[in-house]
Image (cartoon, rainbow, N blue to C red):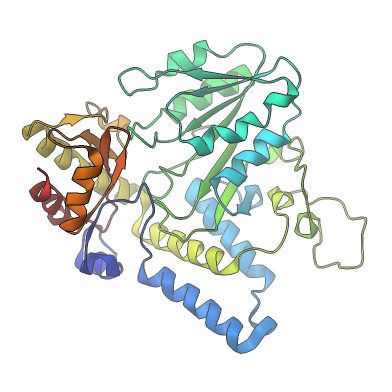
Length: 377
């Protein structure tokens, strides 16, 4: 039986629906029953059996295949990390920078896609930040900032404040044509919008579990295009980075020829188990179906907000520019005051800047949106 977005069966997977209209997935998602149960089982097995409960090597391979399926990547292009920042740091610290190189990014990025790149500045690298126009990132503006010394274009799939969805297909094609590496912070898109690293010509991608991927904190994954694995210096590496981690007495092993070389040591297994259970759920529902459902739901929210006279921060004219995020300005109180009022009514959203950010997922319904609208001043 197919799990339909917005269905009673989908809602039943999320105990949070019994208390709240939870519309805050761009901040931190609640755990679903499958994910929480998988984590509890792992902890119980470890408690009862110790090392006999340790996952076999084929579990990790299955997880790589699952993450790769989500991205249309190869399993050997996937490394597991603790969070998005760790993946971006692998690129910022791993490329062979030269004085005079530059990185092109944009001014509306979340700080997780800002500070990692500062690690390259001591190498003589300049960071160029392209401004937004009316909440949008113009591809032509980004490309105008690219020159013969640009090594990386670093951008988010979805901008965390406005919800603007960047045109990764066009950006990726332009970067490939110019010989520039294309690095994507995918945390505000992965799990709610389809990602195809081949069609988007992405070279590096980093994401973490606790937002749209519906996973716990402490686990994420990093994609490195196979042809760049050898060119990206891991800088830091450990026993899991080697070609044969189970060969405990060979101290002179080469690094793994796959993206697993970027994995330093023992994983936070409860978090990784939970994240991979959430990815399995998303694949079962189908990310394409999730995207269509969420875009329809946020489209109805946008129409309702406009009808009530609220000013949208999110660019909303074209569906292909939208995501799961809708941000608007309140009219009669500060964002913090309005969010407090919403919380009292059992509606969970976030204040961001001078706006209120709403971010529903596939189990949310119009009733959740209506509860939000009814509680607004």
